[in-house]
Image (tube, rainbow, N blue to C red; front, top):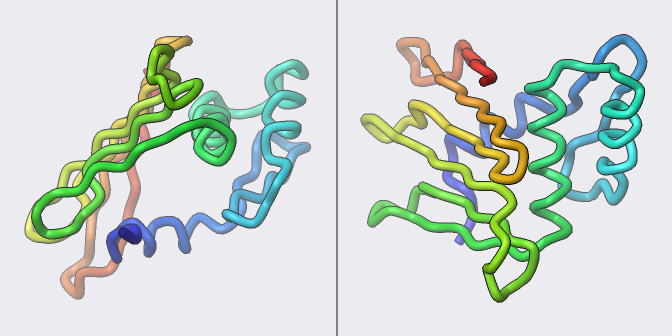
Length: 137
């Protein structure tokens, strides 16, 4: 199954992410090397922690075993990432909540580090994504 239209809109609106004042990190599905940039940003003490968490998740998604869950409407409602297919060591989870067919919020949890990034999405009267509020804890 493919990502829901709302999530695809959000991913398309992100494009590239700038970490700190030094790193511009490609975050599309065809990029094979985001992890190097994330590791460099972490060890250099650069960057916004929520951006780094986003990038760690995207790198892990392409590198480790993952499963997606969907609701009856076909919307993506969860992502789990584990070290391998035995699912013994959980690395990340994402929970997605919808209202009236629009993505309302996403909660990304780094299981190992205990970091959580919650994003709340708002839409204009035409149903276009207007704002994303990010809370990192």
